[in-house]
Amino acid sequence: MKQALLSILSTIIINFTFGEIIKVKIFYDKEWNICKESRASYVRKCNWNTDKNYFEGEFNDYLINGTKIIEGNYVNNKKNGLFIFYYESGIEWIKGEFKDNIPVGIWTWKYPNGITHFTLNFEDNNFYFINYFDENGNDISSNKINFSYSFQNDYQNQNMLINGFIINKMKEGKWFIYNNKEKVGFDQFNNDSLIKSKINKSYLNINERLINNTLFIPYSVYACDKIIIDNEVSIEDYPFLSVFMKNVWRPIESAIGILEDSLNVVPDNKPMYIDGIDGINKNISQNLILNKKYVTECKNFGWLYYEIIIDEKGNVLDQKILKSPDSIITEIALKSLKSLNTFKPAYYQGKPIKSKFSSRILFREPRVVNP
Image 1 (cartoon, rainbow, N blue to C red):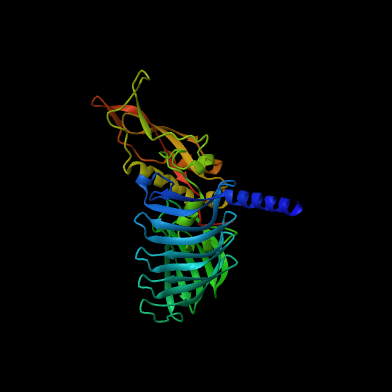
Image 2: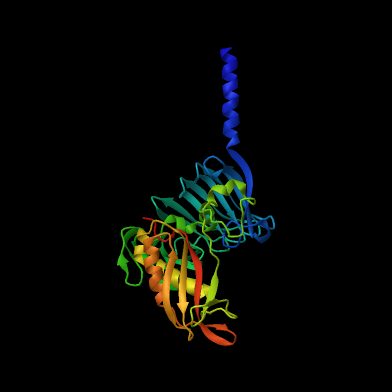
């Protein structure tokens, strides 16, 4: 009887455990936001823990045409074990291991022709060069090398660059981070040892290194962890993600014309900024990423919603932050909005009118500094 009871309990436990993990496909747009299949650029085939609502076990990411670009593994919602990244040709690009979300140990980068480019050892949030080869496979590790490495910080900051000199496999001098060719800050090294770190336009000292190990890893693996869901997605598309879709406020980009008697109308032409929505968001984003307070102190990230009042001449009359994930983001974003140049005004029945314009911008946790 006792043995039968134990067998029943064992069966219940096994069924319960496996019942928490399901195999799913998640589709992503070009920004790595979760989207409908019809709009997808990428797809992740993975396991999902329906009880704890996170990735669990092995996963594979593909281009929508079926080409594998990443394979890896999660343990208790953390990246653990071997990760391999591939070029679109199918040739291996990057290979290395994570431990509790942190890249550790030996990582190898390869050229598109399959020849090893360089190998790093990640240790205590620092990186050390083991070797460096040219595209023909010649070992040039003992040379003085001007090292440059492109990375993406978040969707608004796609053109980031690490640049510094390697001498006899050791980092020497100032290693800068650039954002669209503008210097964000630097780490200074002597024989591979960090001397100091400074950040933003005034080069304020910071307590942590600027170039941390996570910057070398493709942005997509961090973007997917955020579970950012496109506006058009419904619970029917991803029922297992329903917990992330409850009570989410999602206003759409809009513009309202305001006549002299305060009557609201739909303008024939919306107000336009010189570089459009992207120009406004880029202004906010760059001011944030270059601000020490945001990079080192901001704790909460997500969508920022804003509103701008524009007069008949295109001058900005007022700016408001409608909703923000963090007071630091609110403070800096509001200053950014106040610095905007003149708009092309909205038009109604052939005449320029006063208008109110609202939109949003997404802020994910930056990977420049990880205090």
